[in-house]
Length: 185
Image 1: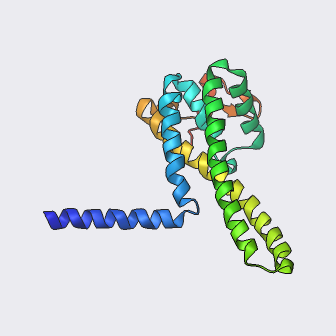
Image 2: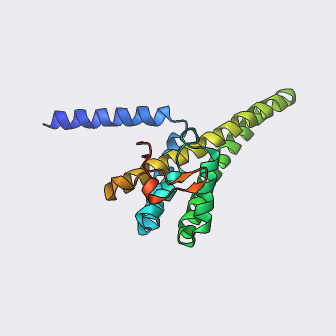
């Protein structure tokens, strides 16, 4: 029995290590997950189910959703006073995560610059900023992905039938026409 438990723990830790290593934001992922859990527990869980699904619609990856649809969702969130607190906290939490990443990367860049010649520094600087811009975008998508998974699971426990698209290019879809189900994470 003890050997089975030890084997299970070993396998679990190996799988966790592989998953953490495969994510370019491995260490930040734990921070993002904790932030999402707090945000959902403190604020989103107090909203009605449709308001919760509004935020789930916001987190849908752009490949699944058009820019116009996302803009309509954002406009709806900004116009609904009941969503203000959750929206502001989401913005603050996202900013903290991004700032943490930026600070870490800035330190790495400064350390790298110290080891290079003046000529190599300029080339290195441009390469760094090109990669950095791409990584910031990837981090934002990762944050949205983690929040989507957490929020989807939270809503699914309450009312799985509510997990549908609420917006299209024209704006809020009438309740009776909401038939397209959100993608399962």
